[in-house]
Image (tube, rainbow, N blue to C red; front, side, top):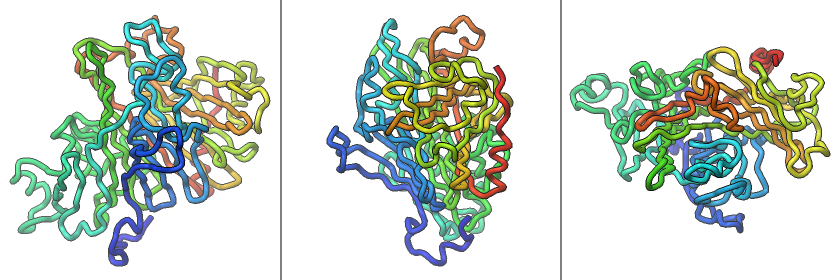
Amino acid sequence: MMSSNSARFISNPFQLGGIRTGTLDFPQPQGAQSTRVAFIDTGSGLRFTVSLDRGCDIVDAVYKDCALGYLTPNGLMGRAGQQTGMQWLRSWAGGLMTTCGATNIGGPQEDRAWAEGLHGRHNSLPASILEIKNPNLRGDLGHTDCAREDGVKSKQNGAHGEGGKTEQNMRADAGRNDAQTVREESGDLGGDGNGLGGGGHNLRESGEIHGSASDCAANGYGVGLAGDRLMMLRAKVCDTRMFGPSVEVERAIMCELGSSQIIVRDRVTNVGNEVVPHHWLYHCNMGYPLLSPLDSELVLSGRVVKRWGTVENLPEIDDIKRVTDVRSDHAGSGEGGMIIEPAGETAVVGVVNSARGIGLRMEFPTVALRRLAVWQHFGEGSYVCGIEPFTGSLWHDDYETEEAKRWWLEAGESRDYELKFSVVEGDDELAKLRGCDAALSE
């Protein structure tokens, strides 16, 4: 954690970390030139790229000298437009987190009134930036500057503003809080009575952006610190068409300067006038060197409800947790996997690399993301393990179940999701992560 008086030693906060946006011009010949991205440096050694033209998803992610995610040979390409059949595979960049949905996950659905390609359209669509919030280590000076979608800057009051008034007093006088740009558009992803945080809190008031993360302290996130260490990117992705279906996704990606955590909060809303199918999956792709044979193990628990591919014949279902070397039966499209129903209100899963002494921890509330897919493709030069929380159906063969009633969005209905990544290191933290592992049942 950075010193509480860091502001005394710097003149530019980007010296420590923050969010910058720009476009790429090298090296992708396939069309990534001018692709919009956000580069996020948490200041802890965790750095990652958000693909603004591809669903506001997280592509490459690195902690210190260790890459966390798998990147495909496609590289990061520009927006893909309409993709049917298996075309998704031709432009998928891989990376730490790819979003699949919002009306289809899994294989193509060609028999609908509108054709749905592999894993839906979300990752093929551009995002519009709603807000970028960078850390302000001089918060005691009374304001921060926050970029908004209208191109102007909003001045946020410090903890105590004019005449010694508290921020709450000043808000009451003004009748509004300029910092809450979300509410001007479509609700507060940072957390209010209707937002993902719930409970009537506002992100900038309480700092409680962890949601259901059970055992990590909020560490202030703008409260109780010298200045404001919160950094946040808010964006909207519109998956719409004439005559429907029309779905909008509002996303907030949040970090704290000096912390090795990423919180992703999504609100998916049916903005059309009729019911639409809703399937939602976070395709989180672990790669080398975080994922290394013999050195790495998966942290999983719950009940296995389906297996496929090379995992079908495992002698023991917990063998899936052992990261193997390159496999000849995973050449080409060889793969294996299983679907798990995690137990408890909050699922904790991840990867531990004992040789490097680091782990990647993922947490999500199971009330929203009921299942977890574990996908393994350990091919030569194509070495990846997907850990994928989801709701909906990957095979679209179980619509007669009670759970299937959740796989629809009524007109105007919204669903909220949260996923937290934490890079952990040190014996104590790795032991805590390993302690979340339990024998799988079937």
